[in-house]
Length: 341
Image (cartoon, rainbow, N blue to C red; front, side, top):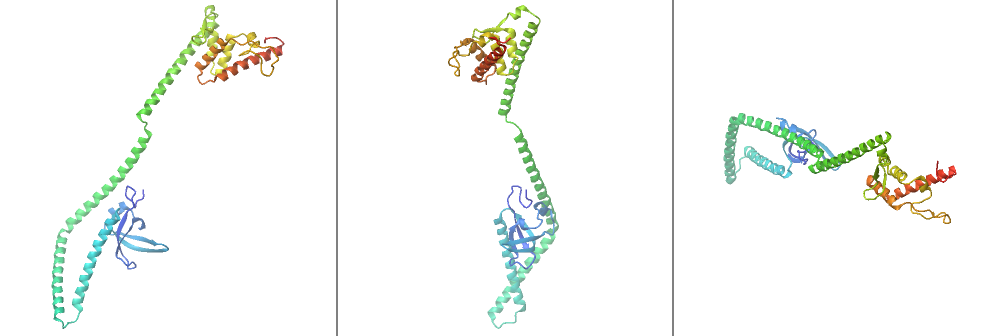
């Protein structure tokens, strides 16, 4: 924040008294930014001399003056009112002084009325002078106490400024911490997501442990587990061996999962001599039509894949099965047999 502004960032104005005769007016109101080295905090602390250098600019005209700062306020109109009061007081004093000088140095006039006026003015001036002397006497007696009060007020003003600065810094710090903190709704959503993730990982871990147990039992040659059947998809009526099912579930990609299930539900000879939907290929219409693979098994493979990998497209499943059939046919063609060795 600019030190010539208040804590809210508003432009400050100063009431100054020119120390030179270059300017036509003795008192004026200008922006605090025109003062060289002006600091609001330093101004309230300074006692006695409050002179500053003024950079006065108007168009291409640039002049430098020296002035005494009388008051500071963010409201320009308030300083203007105070300026008018001081100017009126100075004008009254100037008129009274000139009148007194005229009375003292003017020659005797024959006009009686003028003499009366001069005598009357002299009496008024004497009364005013007496009033000023009494006021000065009162001021002298109360000077010490006023000085103490001024010192206390200055100290309090300095403390107020320091407290305002500290409050402003704390506001900024609190706002920064508030921005870093998450709302209760965000924390609740994040906690719910973590719980769901933990449940999914727990289910996966349980499934993997079951699969590992099945594989260990199958490697031990347990005939009862080798003959155990697992339904590929609930309600499909399609079954495969528990070992084949465990091996398929170890895969982390949908394409590998599909290939393992295809190998578990169809033998190589059936795959070579068939196609997914049956019929002839569009590129060889004269070829012998091929029978379609069991649609119930194909549907079970599709449903099981979508359950394990929900984001998988059905077209990818069909493409994977077709690629598996094409690879088996290519191996069979190279070996000269109906199916690979």
